Length: 81
Image 1: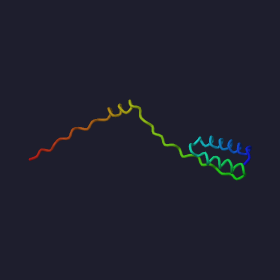
Image 2: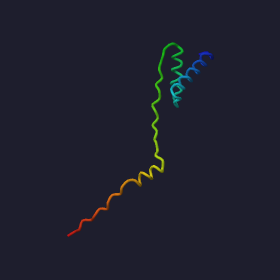
Image 3: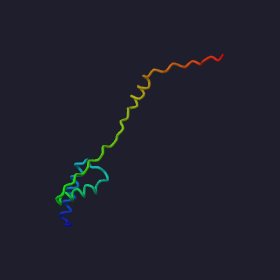
């Protein structure tokens, strides 16, 4: 591979990576896809799976929701005869 075509592959791989949302650890996938696209065969790079994120409640909301709940009535003990 000549230096010029290597630069073309690098540039195309970078643009494919950016379009896919800059996923981590998939550099070889984008490099190979760029090479194949430049040689004439087209290959689509799968977008990464969406990351699972947690949404945390603010502490004030947690405290308020705990205070709003009614407390259960105390249980009565059964008398033994």
